[in-house]
Image (cartoon, rainbow, N blue to C red; front, top):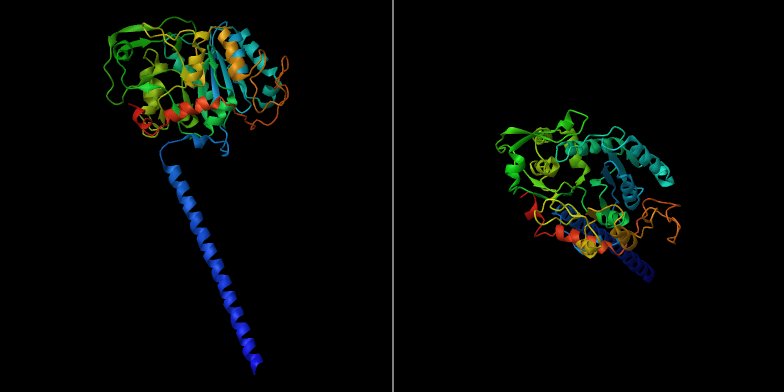
Length: 415
């Protein structure tokens, strides 16, 4: 009589334990689902927030997608040696480089640069350096400078599909960071940020640039001459607001595609307006980006360049020397303008900031050789995704954090 009772007790306990087991699994799954949902909600909220960063966003523990830059390097007669040096300091297999010698330069100079690029094994491997064959005529202070830049953008869009930011430089520029440093910091930035110095407070430029009407003969002839001034003046536009700033920019692929393809009328309208505008390269992109609702909230009011201006009249940048080296370094800017050819400060930048030896590329994670005297560390190269940022990135990180600070970022956009 006891055996059935014992069997019943064991069976009851077993059923109870099974029930507890499945109930526990249910609660564990429920808790896990809630935790996952919470993390997903938090992630979504973060992605939808405005651009606001702190130093933890740049931690190497995160592995964001590495961007690519598309560089336009402009030059004129006699600047081939500077272009070679700049390309060596600036080169990275991930990026694209378009070199344009204007119509003043000789065909021999264009051929020289093309042969130089092809002579480098890494360039032959990645095919990421291009030389414009049909040169543009560029008139000083004329709209042909903007036209040439748009021409360069169009070529880069056709030749290279997968890049994120467009950067314009000329033979007088030089980088202050390695490309590994720059790619590392920009890996953590949204791909919709346009870096260009801009303001709607055009001041004296209203009467000296906006109201006068000029004609640039470079748009119609192959012989270079100065711009012509019309006697008439024009009124300020009422359908759009003028902006002005630095001609040096770092622009997103999305925005420059909009300027080229112009799927609404803003880029075309403003291009016609700036055709008769003095120094239009200091206003065209700035006015387009700030007059379109899709792009006016993407601007960062900085051109990412270090420059020192003459004083008075604060019109032209001075040539940078070793006197300005410490100030350049502390600025955190990735590029500087402008340098005389072979100035000793360039050697100091190579040695202390880029770790570059004369005649060789600035080394990066893609270089497999050892950095020893008289040896090219990039003679052997590997994975272009191998990024090795240096301690120098802290200065660039500091600048970016200042520019994207929540209290300053929005207040400086298109004002």
